[in-house]
Image 1 (cartoon, protein in one colour):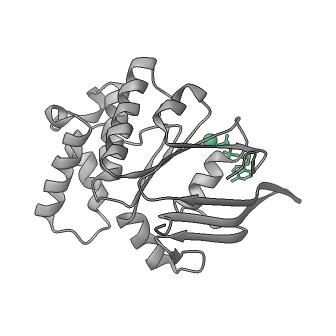
Image 2: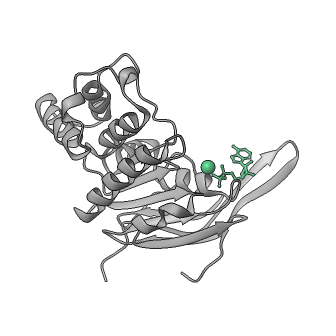
Length: 226
Ligand SMILES: Nc1ncnc2c1ncn2[C@@H]1O[C@H](COP(=O)(O)OP(=O)(O)O)[C@@H](O)[C@H]1O
Ligand SMILES: [Mg+2]
């Protein structure tokens, strides 16, 4: 078996609220295999976003280890972390976080602000990413003029443009109507079929059919057999 793309071992997260400490994640173990589409479900407040933020290296665990492509990121310095975030990870959020007055293409190009790519290569990769989400025709349209589903697909293009090792998505269909949600899920399915590893967090059990594996989080722990 090949090494996991992403691995969390005994990960804990505790937030201090006033003088109270609240444990949001409690010794969570998770291995993400290359090429899988893992869906993590759980009720609101169960720790899904916290878990995904730790996996995305946007926050540090209170205990345990996060490994990306075999490398322990828990003790990595800020330079190494930004490099890993920029080139190895892609992140998609419920709110698309696009710049409304920039075109779809310009929004995708933002992915390359903190990478080493030459401008020409960045442009090629951005065009390719827009094609993969079926939005080449909208490349020159301002983001604010797109539908919600199109905006989320631009956000996905931005997330995959630098060819990350894993795509992390937090409730990516949470703001979308059923048709747009299906378009977005179809895109995830196509990307996964082409080999991209995906971890998606959702409370919508209707979406499980797109995944290759499912884990269930409740009160900061996985409530299933790994
Ligand atoms: N920065 C924070 N400070 C304090 N509590 C937090 C913070 N982030 C999340 N929490 C708490 O952690 C719990 C899990 O939150 P979250 O990971 O966002 O859950 P989910 O995404 O499953 O809805 C919630 O009770 C939330 O209030
Ligand atoms: Mg959440």
